[in-house]
Amino acid sequence: MSRTRGILRDAAPVTGETIGQRVRRLRTGLGLSQADLAGDELSASAISLLEAGRREPQSRTLELLARRLGATVEYLTDGADPAGEDKVRLDLLTAELELLAGHPEAALAGFDELAAQPLGPALAHRRRLGRALAVELLGDVAAAITELEALHADSTTRSSLDVDAALARCYRKVGRHGECLALAAAALDRAEGFGLRGVANHSELVISLVHELHEANRVDEAVALALRHVDHVTVAVTAVHADGYWRASRKAADAGHVAEALSLAERALAGHAAAADSRAAAVMCAVTATVVLHNRVDYARAAEAALHRAHAALDSVGTAADRAFCEVGLAGAAALRGDLPAAVARAQRALDLSAGQPPRLEQAWALMVRSRSRQHGGDAAGAMRDVFAANEVLMALTPSRRSAIALRALGDLSSGLGDTETALAAYRNALDAAAVDWPGRL
Image (cartoon, rainbow, N blue to C red; front, side, top):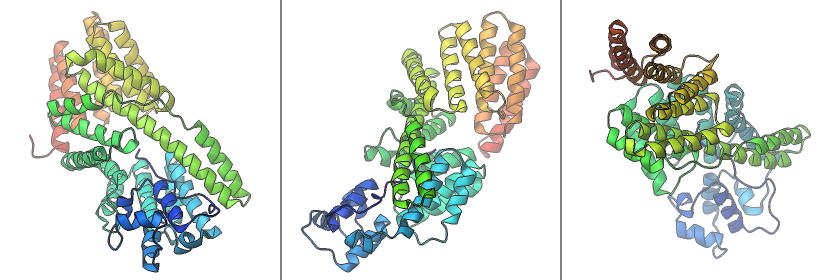
């Protein structure tokens, strides 16, 4: 998923803090530069002077700053922060934590309960984004797109990489490939212009763009992009400590210590966000390495090494689906260098990770890698059993460009095994899937 920002301020005012120091603390806590905070009626230089204590803000300036920082004029002026405002912030953080913990139903309920609260623009933006992400996780991608497009077009909020990454991902899920490619390319340029790497937004944009370029047969561009990012995988950061902070926050809230609960929830959110960054970077590494592996033989060894690094990280922070994808990539790498037993073992691990889950594309690819390895090892009967199993998986999936590519590969595999009938059926199904997902291009 995309990274949710939660650090707005300390739970209690800092003793002796000036207005300028308070503005600076809020701004940096939100990850904003002075230029980001500036806008109509308020320049970056004016903000710099205010933060340095060299200019006293007028009432209009305080109103603008409060609105853009998601605070109140009273808080900026004297640090006063009513308990009710703390409670609203805590409720928002709790909903965001539920989302990051994989509980979209609870998250959606929390975001909806906040709809009637008087939130400033920054907090309202976070609530709307969180709600859209919860809706996406619950499977209503079309509704999520509607909400994300409204956020993307909202002139009262700055363009958000959180929104762009999520919207590109959703466009890809529903087959709006041209829109996904254009949005991901523009957003990735912005992210890298900011020097932003290693966070979930950047990683997800790379994943979307590499997939779209590769599947649109713009292979050279896909490989070039993949090579730029294939070595970027961070040390796995788990959310173990974050979970501890969250449990403590809930206990503090139940005891009525709202300020303490808020402070603990902010730490929990930061920990979960770091884990999300780590997972996204590892998945990006696996995706880019797989693209390089199958398109640049001269980089095969480096790509396999990158897959091993991604695998090590995903063992700590990845989902079963993430690990299955990585195992399929490693199975393909083993097959390419002729280690057929390792290829079969890796493919089997991918299938074991997918056991009991709804049909997924990774299952079909694992079966096809195992089939090809068995074919080269002289087990034609076992290879054909895997072909039939892969076909069952692919027929259970919603037709898409991705399933069309897999079906075409299944046709090639069947043809190589001498089963012309299965091969022709796979090719026909590939054309049908491509026509559904990419109308007008066949």
